[in-house]
Image 1 (cartoon, rainbow, N blue to C red):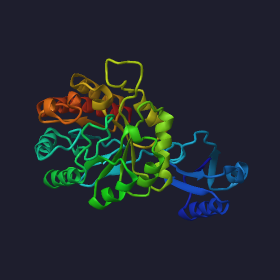
Image 2 (cartoon, rainbow, N blue to C red):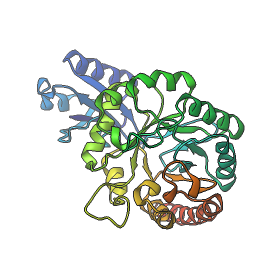
Image 3 (cartoon, rainbow, N blue to C red):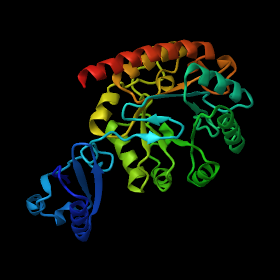
Length: 342
């Protein structure tokens, strides 16, 4: 249930109605937009008489919310969430970024890759220190040494780093090391203990869609994180498993506008994992920009043929230079269209 307040609602009036709601044993989630203030009621809303709530002078109307996700719901929070990483790097609400780097951290070549990504226009660095792999014999990542290398690359380039956390026991380590974004991979998209643990931190989370997850399951995973207090969540469309075998996954670009309609959280697109082949990464990155993605996550490696994981989908630095030029061109068109609509 949500209560939309009148435009002239004072801070005192808002505080009063919040106290009344909490006195009924519910949690009140207040969202102030430029045009209206919305209070989301979370809990057993059968304790609230909607007609009584709507009769209050400060309330314009009351609306029931049927979706099980509440905090992630745009009805609760009409304005886009913007996540600020410092240094002018923001995602959401019209702020667009490109996250680039190798699938896995392999060694000192990370610095070279990071430099090239930044020079091409990327603003955030990705790289896996811990790698979930289908085979137990495949490369599993460098662990803590990989985090050290990522932090060294950040110190040199100034780019915030995005890296995957796989275990509840490692969350505290990631926080202590000052990791900028904890990524939850597709295989852990419904690891509810891990979702709740990262939710207890204030570190931004990049939550990837499950291997065959629905949009609602992605939103409910975000709800697990947000229910613990961490609202800094980005949703990532990275392709889903279907009967099609010509690409690694099926890139569900429908999800980008669908998620924007349903939630206020930023939407990120990953054309690398979605397609699995270098030749498809650029066109799908451009398509994701046109669809309204708030950010892209793209794999870049200085020598994909020798990459320790997922080399088949990595762009070379030269390829990434060209892709970034085309991304800027598409973004320019999208921005012009937005200005015309405004």
